[in-house]
Image (tube, rainbow, N blue to C red; front, side, top):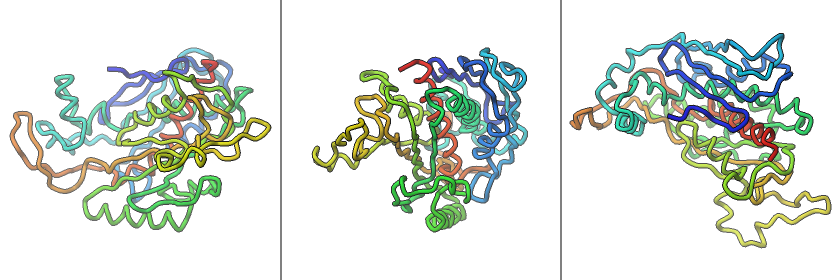
Length: 355
């Protein structure tokens, strides 16, 4: 099982959803980076469960404890070990899953591949794992701001749709400072209210709903990525598809470009090398071109619903299963900081690779 992400700036993680703790080791972090621990915790707070009426009501403080690699507030260049305690485990909520496979979960495939599975909330395959990624991403953001060539890199993600409710404004017209002013993390108050109302309604029905997160990375230097098997967009897509519930990724004009003519889609150059439009999404030939990088990530509805569904047990018998426990009716609002964190990990890794 591969539990490591990255080439130079590497994150290796451990832990299960309802185990004692989760955590990780970050290797390859440059020395002398001054860390803002409050900022790291703030990123975790954006992702943690129980933060609003439209998220899972599991109550976890998600307080990160650093075990190594930091001295007097600075990174030492040695592995950074960290841990997050699971303080609100309720494995009994999943006792009904011990012999049955939940539809559209990792239960069946995990069991067939490894011959054993932790049925308590999915164990290792649980989205609780993403808290580890947010810790590493929060550190990566701070490293990006302290490396001379990339001090001005800014990464902002936001909820751009929930179900059929879309934020139609282009990202250039949005105020990213408003993302954290509402519980759905949409930088438009009117659209945010509609999204919240929809999620609340869906939750009362015992159902779930999907949506999209849009991410924008500004001031990324030219030259990150390679033209063949290490394209920048390919690594971003790989990172995003590592997130539980992700079903799609598009950058720049994305799928809309399929209905365009080349004369409409081409980004014509200005004399200084910038482009008049940016339908390429800041990446051309797999390499960053200095323009804004922007992409959209699609999330499916959460698989656990509070309705009876047909499934099978370990012996192949058809049985009926109804979801129990504490689950998100829509994962999108809590996914926003995860998308930002993985983007930071990818960009920093490329910068440290020098390509």
